[in-house]
Image (tube, rainbow, N blue to C red; front, side, top):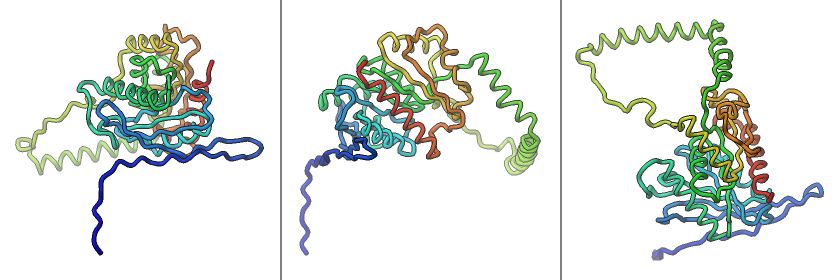
Length: 322
């Protein structure tokens, strides 16, 4: 059978009209459409737009910022679940890959990743404004996505709200006290902890003796490695963080912070956010949740559902006209 030559052409994904589901005398809007989009200064950013047919605010949408090297679906499809839930509650959203992540091309300005992410978030807002007349957005970010969201909001006044999960943390007196009683004392009193420590010390000693026999010290290879910590998240100083949060509040940006047990080494009680940033005039624009039993990426289904419900609730509240 003769082969048919394939002609390359641009194909636009069809948009399916959202439908309504009536259940228990309540009309629930369930948008079934998603639109793959390409945008950015070099047409290098790829994302998925999730519309809604019953917007709580015509000119407001949400944007999900990728955490670390994860793509736009988010950890365990968190962003997908959030987009679906928000669509059913009246908020359109865009989830996209930052440059060099997922399907977005590694094109962009040199310099700090924070500044590059900030510029790309502004380009995402530009696309929403041009294509859907969106005038303001609410950002959701986890981990480095939280850092990027907070930084981008200071550069772009169109950001009217932020939900940040496991953002910056700074020690306080109560944090240190909790750390002693919640982390160190239980280990000191644990027989199993002492047994594990003893085994590690003995195993390390035996391993060291064996390595020295096999690889005498004079002939052991030497390696030059990157210093520990240079590729990890680095928070701004506490004073700079205070200035940045004050700037956000002064421009009317609403904030909701979520902290999990996954960052217990920097944050371990609910009120720590306000204690560690004393002096900031919050103007009732900031709220905090603390979920100490939950891990950093909400790996359990029930934890992820809790995050989806809570984040969606806050975003919808931020989107509603005052």
